[in-house]
Length: 449
Image 1 (cartoon, rainbow, N blue to C red):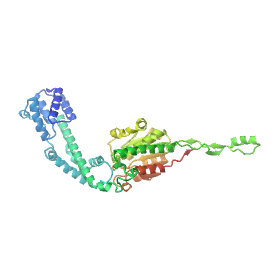
Image 2 (cartoon, rainbow, N blue to C red):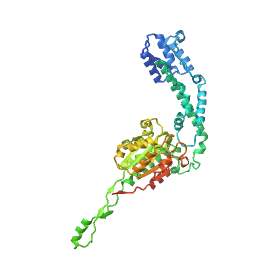
Image 3 (cartoon, helix red, strand yellow):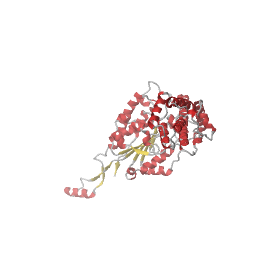
Image 4 (cartoon, one colour):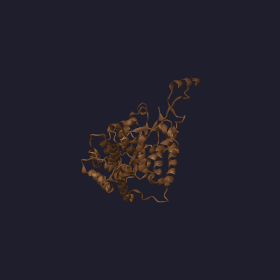
């Protein structure tokens, strides 16, 4: 390696100043490769720079000019028997690295969406949710399959990986743009017709609230969490009595000449019920996760015998995190979304509930109530009925809040019917009025032994 690392970094800054900016990881890969390369020719270093950094013809032409200006070297002056431009076996790849690449990506995005089948764009989920669905389609996987090539040298592997990443990023962007356009066409279908400027804020769908409206509703949602917690804090009244204590009754009657004037009853022992809270924070939950987490926050702040979990493709206990968070920082959990991904970031209710049942705090303790906030969208993964049975046996009471419109339940990848069968109560909960009504309807029976 003849060109020093510092000089390469300076050259990358020079390129940025001249409107040719390369990703930092691409610069890093170039440096690593040059450090490993077994050669000591300046011309070879230049040829690697020219081969590794650009992603398309336009960048290559610009880079060629900048190399000449910075290193005083014409790339065309150096001839090498080796070619550093990959010779892909599939000719389609060349179509995506020329001046018309953007329009070609848009066409491919349309093909992927059309081949996917019927998509209900009226569902109130994020655009990224549909992107994740489309990325798992056969058409998408086939579109990037021509990059799955084995190469004989490290340079070709790096170039291929850079080309693949560029291709996928451009395709993802085109898909998101197309999804956004299609959803706008359905806008009238999924914005509730009853919404108007004069409506009651409590009846407004969480998804369509602005920042100020959300601020007000989130405070009220926290208060609902406190109300829910209070339902658990209550104890049986001291006047509650249980079975007859025969021995004490006889002993006390001796003071009255054997007359049973004072009957002694065994007091009922109050046993505080224990609660598990579970909130889906996957992409399909959109904004509803924030309100679900706020409800959990209110309960955890007030009630000690509770454990709160979030889940995507596995569960994470956030009880301590919620206790240490300030109200205004609840959204931090969603901004750190990747911290709660266990496998691939796609919803997996079956795995999440299996993980829940395997938790030591759950398997070794007695919990009688489970409250779930989720849409039961499982990305077409199978649901194990054995897990459903175990949930039903573990939790005497299961309460389920589903933020999706009831008309979409059990359609597509929705597996809600499995959980409806074991729920004591379930309901559509997508606005504050529905949330308040559901919380008020929950009646925790006092546990007495």
